[in-house]
Length: 352
Ligand code: SAH
Image (cartoon, rainbow, N blue to C red; front, side, top):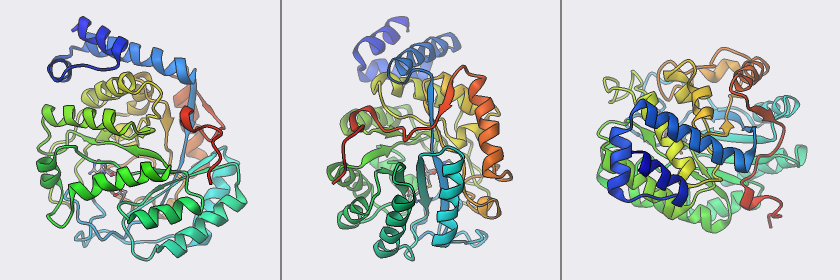
């Protein structure tokens, strides 16, 4: 196993057989070695800096019906909400004061948020905070729509591919959703010039090690600027309510492997990882992650954005969250910086 880890560090690649061995049979000592190599690489590009993104969960209306997700269309127990433009702008203003220079607008696929409404919102945020980046995470749209949103000021787009295996994708989503369309969206976003994030859930129902290898191959092919991965966690009102969660160990192993594959990628230690392990986000940072995405949504709606059960940080105000997080980050030897936190290849490139 040591030879495999050395090869991964040296060449940023492995054969399928080597990936299989590493994913299936790494011992705790191997994981520690992987994490140490991943940290070394992360520090080469980012030093001790940790980038923060203010996450604004602005709507939980969704036209989709993903089997794993608590805000799926057919969940009658989801209490639906939609923030007003004023509320969203207020979140950004608060976030700015707290040191955020990236805002992530995430939501279900909500038809209320037309291109016109979103473009007006993006322009207003950019006008108020010209030194901030805006990330959108609002699912699948047409290439024309992605282009309009980009022209209106969006810099980055998060669209997890969820799984790179078509048959597995079809186990996680109803027939009305298309694996090919999601992949097309990722290619469109890249072609337009967004900094793009994809990623998969770890330990989702039916996931096999072969699927994870396909996920890693997809990352190599797409070369995303960001990769968001987190454990699958069941939500009690979904068809997957009785399924087991993904594990901390596999999520950390994959974070380290992804850092070694894509050395300068932006890699968050996610809220889902912090949910299955009290120290999950710290462990994520120590396994090669360099980004955190704390919640900036108004406290009153946080519990309603219930993608999965027992989600952390649904009670505190944004200011409390950032204080708690800063202490957690310091415990790892890293520190939060006030910075847009662009991908190194996209720094200083004016958007036209
Ligand atoms: N509607 C947007 C945003 C989705 S929510 C979109 O389609 O991209 C963001 C991510 O949360 C999803 O991409 C999925 O990977 C993750 N997620 C949803 N339900 C989850 C669950 N039960 N456990 C863990 N992660 C989940």
